[in-house]
Length: 196
Image (spheres, rainbow, N blue to C red):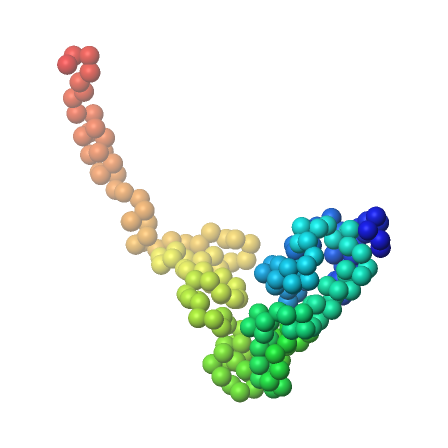
């Protein structure tokens, strides 16, 4: 692509990126590259972060890709990289896309093999980072609560269950109690607000 051509989709570091997006936002869509890393990378390479991706030349794309693959060669400090002092190799590097997924997978498997507490939590499928798990993070079906005193239908087809004498006494008031409440309501004198 030349400076006058516009690419609707541009491939950077193995990912297809929409050409209408700003460069700093588009780079942060690549796994392993965040917004801050994209800003530092573009400022170090002296490329305008607000430039649309579709207007990048092939030379600029290759410069950006080389900067992503070897950020320490262009002057980005080691503490800004996402893999410092690897456990097995001891090398500091910056991993992106599938390399980052593989590194994370290997870390989790190593924790499981060592049988650390984090590895145990990973094995059980529980939360690892100290979150509260009383209400969230539940798995499995919902367990209902059965009310006491209600009999479940036993016959197929939804037959009505028989009720016990204790539940009928609670549910239906005696006829004498019903009459007393109506008498009390009728004997109450009513006053109009206009008389006051």
